[in-house]
Image 1: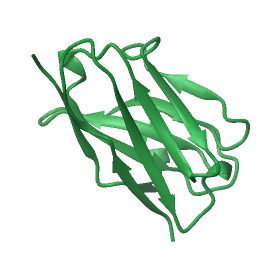
Image 2: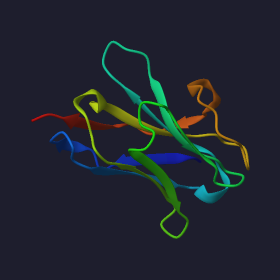
Image 3: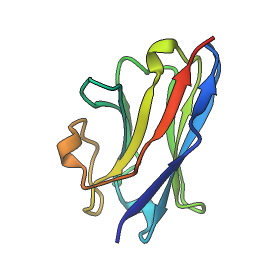
Image 4: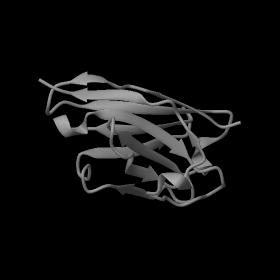
Amino acid sequence: QFKLVESGGGLVQPGGSLKLACAAEGFDARFYAFGWFRQVTGKEREGISCISGSDSETTYADSVKGRFTVSRDNFENTVYLQMNNLKPEDTAVYFCAVRSLFFNRCDSDEKAYDYWGRGTQVAVSS
């Protein structure tokens, strides 16, 4: 049973930072590819980052490259998304998702992911 629980969202001023957590329950996170996505109401879900299950390769969308960092803590069984220099356009609900096969590589298509968390709201505003 794959269960994902996101946390760490909130309200932050432009230029601020937040660290989102995606806690994996019921499985060992280190063997699986995790994606971070975000969605603004009325818009399509956007893939923003991923860490692979094979070699922990990381990928980023151009919109967050250089500002966001994805990582995995095997002891905590948690995947993190460190978000720095946040902008108002980063405001969205953020989701983590996992591909359910061992050692999957990253994929930017949300259809490649099998299990999803419920999301955490991030608001960037002065």
